[in-house]
Length: 396
Length: 62
Ligand SMILES: Cc1cc2nc3c(=O)[nH]c(=O)nc-3n(C[C@H](O)[C@H](O)[C@H](O)COP(=O)(O)OP(=O)(O)OC[C@H]3O[C@@H](n4cnc5c(N)ncnc54)[C@H](O)[C@@H]3O)c2cc1C
Image (cartoon, rainbow over all chains, first blue to last red; front, side, top):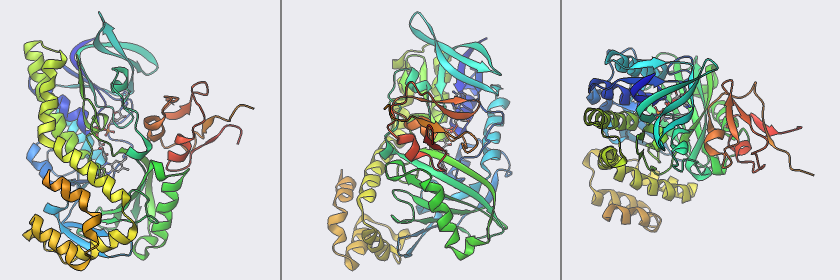
């Protein structure tokens, strides 16, 4: 089997990369170790409406509900409400992630990509010392898939990068360990995605409650692995649900565990190889949201691959166009948000409460750095010191 | 006595890959779509045990 491109993983990053590479004329194969694209769903299922601008999803079958905004609850319950446009790239739609992933894969296939399920990459093929495809297990048979370009779209646990010599092992400080329920028999009609913070609620992470319409919500928790112990995420999630009247009556339709990188991006290219999505750690370190970045980065990767195939140039230097472009698109933001994550992690619950208290009446639509700082310190002058690292960042 | 090695209770594993992403020894593998510990590579550091969100990883012999 010989292809121009083999994409390992049929998540959003893989499918979108495949789509744009195929559209540019490349012969593309996606391999996926699971037996169904998008299943099991390991996700909060929130994404901003900016996703529409990429034109990679048809129809509306993938949308469970549309959100007006987000509400953040500080440890003592102080509520800060943000309109969707200020709430980051996880608020806008709540999606059915299985259908969402399948629609993205369908888009890739429609552009000519091929897709093999039950096919797990187990190593890289090398020819004259150069990467030349992947070795895979397909229904327990070992097969060689030759390709000029290998795309590691293999998610948080990425092996492809590791096999190519890229340091991919996540530090406990950079991984959220997650548990998540889809609950029925609750009110799923709120127009807000809710986030709950606090060391007792979710150490180093948060609980989310995302309404999916009618009587269903997606409720989950992320706990920073360095603050976790065995089974903690699920235990704290169960406790949260039991102590919230509006969720208590809920019955689970689905229980899942998950792992979400909240790291800085890593190297994303080698000769004949690119990493996209979670595999490249293209995830917002504050929220753990990676769907939008997978799509944005996947598009850039696919376009670069298209040009690489056209010119038959597969060296790192040529492929660095992709790295330059994603850094331009969201590299700075990821770095900034990583610093913010560190600052937030250092904050006591009390400080978060003060922050929320200062922001609860702030008019984000009239945002300016000055007005924000003023709002923060008028009520709680001591916040100024705690926020110094962020101010420095804003000036940088 | 040798330290006990990490052990995945397969019927509890929900296959999220968290343990695989974090193991500094690369001692966790997919076997039939569940995580499994390679006891030769495992150095009993306990990271996977602590990381597993649902508590599916314990110690050998427990
Ligand atoms: C609990 C949880 C909640 C989240 N909530 C949100 C949210 O609300 N909003 C948001 O934007 N983001 C969220 N995220 C993050 C988001 O899910 C990821 O950023 C996104 O899935 C990344 O897409 P991807 O294509 O890079 O990887 P994935 O979607 O993980 O896809 C990787 C694919 O590769 C396959 N694969 C892996 N290894 C191999 C192999 N060796 N051979 C073949 N196939 C392989 C896997 O089976 C998988 O299908 C959440 C994550 C978690 C864990």
